Image 1 (cartoon, rainbow, N blue to C red):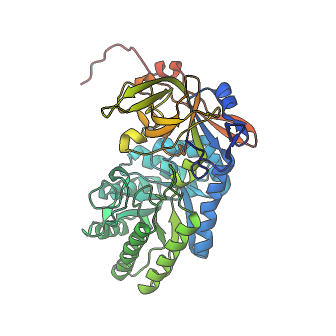
Image 2 (image 1 turned 60 degrees about the horizontal axis):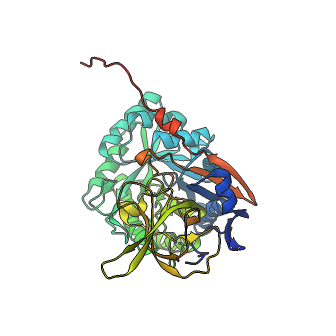
Image 3 (image 1 turned 180 degrees about the vertical axis):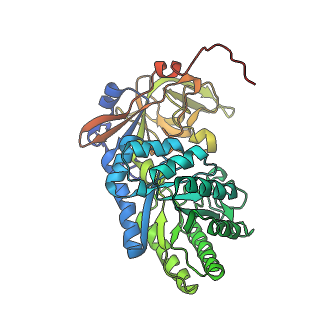
Length: 450
């Protein structure tokens, strides 16, 4: 077990044997706010917002579009205010995510609506709010958005999401640009061209460009470059059919971050440099004007900024078939606050956070408190042999899809989220209570439904 600077937020360090985040001791944070606890390094979050915005602008110049923060990774009203202050946009895919952005007084002209099955309620809310664009994901949505835009008396700007047939080198559940997925219109089958013509014929829609998202947790530029190549070919074919060029190319997100030793978070400059070079070559090849290029990082911004803090409840030694010993360390959270390991085998790091141990490290399994054998946070990790109840365990890089995918399994209240900055801490999402959960229960008289 060791502290890994490449995995923790930039303002995390070990001081006198204890983890400090933004000059706040984790033992003090646990005492003040309880555990499990999501701790966001606020300065790090803002640094990463600005790093992606600057990289896009630096490499695309006048043709830099928007950085849209993918709110699915994690969003709250306070975080939406940080995003707004940075000058970038936000990507939402449900009425709930839109409501959070609007509650933060986010400029609607910097909001885009995504999703593969947008309800009429969600589309109406987005149109009423005045979102900058809606990303069309199915033929039914063409009719639906056009009709609702007509009702509202507006021309709605839209993109169409394309499936470029790229096999991203990532887990099947987070790979989204090959053919056999629920997202977008296939280029190779001709469905994308059909969708583009459908939008062109819709009186209350304006097709601004195309969009794709090849997957998540990708560390190489090859997939992004292949997707951009196929989308630019599509733009060329659209021009030849329709006599006009589409102005926007949205290449989505998916940029990888470090979770364990040996991994390196994708650098925004490296990513944007590679993509910009490719886009310039391909647009020249097809005699197209350089499009406005937008991106949608979420995990790349939120994940590294946040650490989950747990308290150890029990430990036990288990004898393995080969005669070896594995230490099970159970903490007060688990799959209700981090479903990713159980969902698709995501790997994390962890350290003993409240003290230094001089004892030898032993093979350990970090597990949660839920009634599932699959409630495993880290399947195999060497941790000090003297870890005991009351110790604190810190799991870094949990800012993406930790709190946002959290559940109330076993009727567990979801953890609080705090922001730490320059030796100060503040609550930005309070911990749920048992009263919150019980408040959803009702006992009403039966009604006849015909």
